[in-house]
Image 1 (tube, chains in turn blue, red):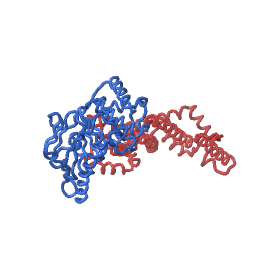
Image 2: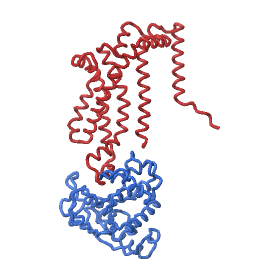
Image 3: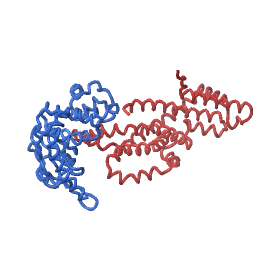
Image 4: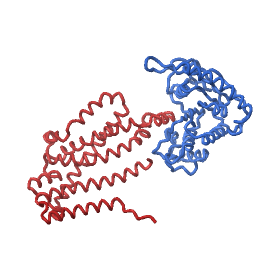
Length: 258
Length: 251
């Protein structure tokens, strides 16, 4: 449902142009959970920015459900690692924001926001200010805010990177449960291989800049998964070793280039 | 057991009371000249006389009206200018040097000119007061808009927010702390603008009354009116602080 075809992106930079992506191909099927992994600065975020219509590729095509991507798509939910709750709104009004932007009336959006908050485990914090929430709770609120408009595809850009390990693991479990429940499509960008293997159906490994796909790995671990269970299976370790050695090569290449 | 704490407000009143008593004692004992420095009891008596005759209320209302209109007009225009410049980087690159230059013009020194243009009445004072506050609002709101977290703007855009929605739901609320700060600064400035404007040429108002009493060496009346202005500023600032606490309760 999501297709990147020979996409090249470059930015003007000091002393010429910086090619962030070069001839990038990526296909994500409906309902698939794909993780995009690569060394830092490999253009992972650029891929999402292209898909979100924020960056125009120099060449190549980007299609979502067959339609070329031109701007922000209402069917895409985007979650970044930044804390993006509006600090002057209560948590409830933050969760209701996307519906508010789309002109949903107050009563309806508040009801739906309440239900979503309960779903992500934030019941009782409706009238709190974002500053009163922990990092993990803020992230849950951000997820609820995006879910409010029933996105067909979720794009997550290292969403849990700034959180502590325990919170991160809890949220990964929540993402797995959410994905299993809703059957939505998720494109998950991370630099954390373990996280990628834990969550994804497929891990796409990107090269050092300029980014392109160096390998795709089917993660044939059984579903439903739980983070703590899956981590210690022999197959997991095996996959992790394969991916690590390939990623290592890319990291070395990145170091050699700089 | 904890010692009960004395609130800072009580301290303020205590310090004031001691100063006033010292002043009264010094002028009663002849240590300072009550001709030049007046004395609290004289000022109090003058206050009662002036309120009884209605002169104080008349001058007070004139000045408050000028300052309020100045704050309103200067504040609204300054806010619009700041928001406009903040959201249009290319326009602001061209116009900011001009704004900085205009702000450098000594606005009170232009007062006589405004009085020539607009007469001795309300309009010239409102113009001085609004010019005084315009730049405060414009520069503050400009800085406010520019300092908004880019991630917030991007996230709202990705949720489908239009330019207008981003302005109303992100830039505006994010600038409110700067607006409140401008209001508190602007309050004093607009009052000084009005009072000094009256000094330069008027037939009523607190500034005119101060200037006229000064010419008569009537120090008690001068200080009485000055104190009225001081009390007014302090009282309004208290109100604004309460409003600020409520508006920015999310901080």
